[in-house]
Length: 397
Image 1 (tube, rainbow, N blue to C red):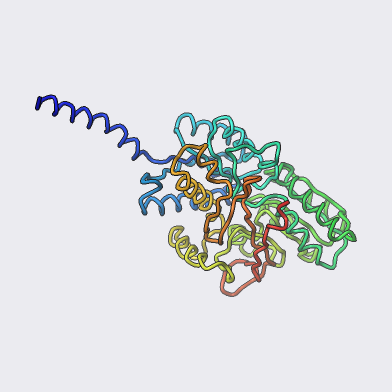
Image 2 (cartoon, rainbow, N blue to C red):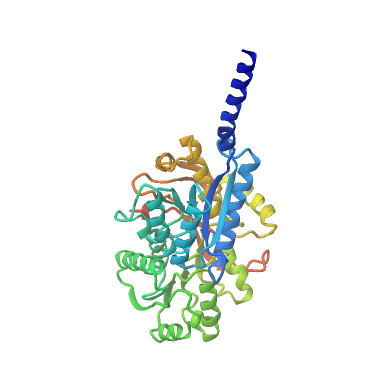
């Protein structure tokens, strides 16, 4: 009898071990992002922000008693490669969720993979409206970035106030550039019908020689320009445009979308930056009127990045993981169907204030900072001054 009891206890213990071990398995999150080429200017810091969140939450015990593990892969800025690595992370690395991608070509492509595999995918960067358009929306895709509609309309509101009539655009010829430029033009025509679009240039994404586009645009004599060139692409364009007198010709009347005024961009260019243009950014370490939580965020970020003037892009990677963790807690599960439902209408207190993912389109009310770039003796690179947060709410529908 005693022997039977002992054997029964041992059997029960043996049966419990797999469940206990399973409960301690990490929650694996695939993070496909650009880590090479011009896009790495934004992709590298975004991935570090995601890792920063994982490190912070793991130090507090993880989520549902489990540690989080980030699996980062380079998409090289190519949608086909983004799809390949996303599938590989799902099938070989056995990730539970996907957070990431950078371009508006990668995001929609990976969204299809997420739908096929019924796995939650949170996009912290791609802006194209196509990602969450009614015909593309599905239960597993969510976005905590701004959109091309929000950005294009925000830029139009700025230029509409300028004493100019002849306006031009220059944007990369793919989903993001096409969508944001259309939103800009349509909104500008609506609120400032006296303005005329005199030229539109469409260099391919990754173009190396912008000279023909610059010369063609200057020949049309615009008085103001909206640009959505971004990252290293904007840097390359600017370095070629400045010696040709492009910015002098338009008297620095440019709104550089695509985070053209982000610390990454102004720091990378240093004295070559066309100070005086307007631009936007998701974050700025010098944002004086930020929500209370932002100051602590910048202190933590500065320590983590070992940078006195930390980047702006970590906030997007951080927020993507922050929303995922909160949804897992709310669902009390890592099941994608349950987490997907938990994300609907979810509000999170982020370093930039409360952000909510709308239930109807899985889109967060994520705005951006805008301002005119100036030289400030405090910093060895251009900053926006004043920094203005543009509420996206009125531009979202």
